Amino acid sequence: MAVWAIETPVQADTIDSLIGNTPLLGFRRVTAHLPENVQVLAKAEWMNPGGSVKDRAASNIIREAERAGKLTHDKILLDSTSGNTGIAYAMIGAAKGYRVKLFLPENISPERSAILRAYGVDIVYTDPLEGSDGAIRAVRELAAAEPNTYFYADQYNNPANWQAHYNSTGVEIWEQTNGTVTHFVAGLGTSGTLMGTGRRLKDYNPDIQVVSLQPDSPFHGLEGLKHMPTAIKPGIYDEHLADRNIGVSTEATYAMARRLAREEGYLVGISAASALVGALQVAEDVAARGESGVIVTLFPDNAYKYLSESFWKE
Ligand SMILES: Cc1ncc(COP(=O)(O)O)c(C=O)c1O
Image 1 (cartoon, rainbow, N blue to C red):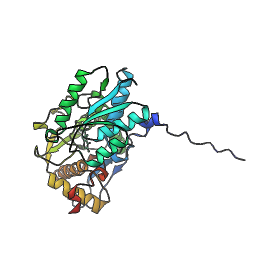
Image 2: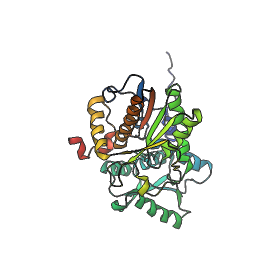
Image 3: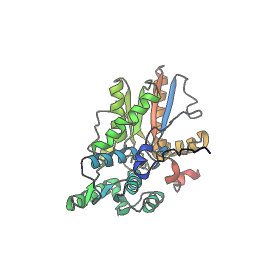
Image 4: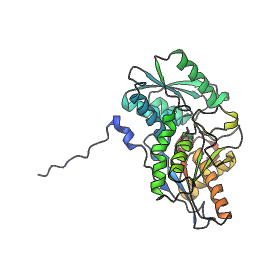
């Protein structure tokens, strides 16, 4: 009788090995007005095991802290997050046996808090009116008061955040486009995605244009994105890296989220829809100049955590 070898399974503590190498998506209808020599592509980051781009940053932050001896099993992993980084910490923490405590603005989507509770995270809610900055201020106080109890991951100031993208996202985009990428467009939250991917792509080819996206007003519905002029500036954010910055409106984003679901079959999250609004603007400018281009953006997550938003009903 033949004995079949079982493929080596992924063990929980090697869940990191499933992160990254996400597919590159193309479009038909939302790009139908563009000439053939102007291509728009997006990385499907919801394919990561925790469901978002933030698996990349969280896993690298944890790996670097373990390597430096800052995160040990007697410490609690502590941070503030608008949701996705928290979900990534929660998943990896559970897989590797670390306790996780997170500070979140109370108005994060009910789906996100439910996921965090399901993973067994200790959640502290902060004033919704103060947004993610209120959560940052509160978590800093606790980290300073009890340094021996917690490992403060500090995603806004931790270089392991942008380095995750320098060593993965940027390399993948270069390889998946065979080095033809001309523009990289991404929204700014902690700015890790834009900083790390942008730096790597510029190292490959300094002519690649890096475009950052922000909400066009301090009062917006673009969960995951920061209006930098009125927010606490992340320590890892270098405003001089991007060649261009585009302000994206909440209304245009919601309309794009509906179009992507109904016309392309991509049920993406809010900041992903913003990313495509920005990428299309860049693509239209390239086309208007009569140039060719390969414009790559990134879809941080899918819509599952935002289905309670009323804009889907329109
Ligand atoms: C849904 C979503 N979009 C965009 C971002 C921004 O990514 P980054 O923090 O790398 O700037 C985040 C970050 O938390 C996010 O959760």
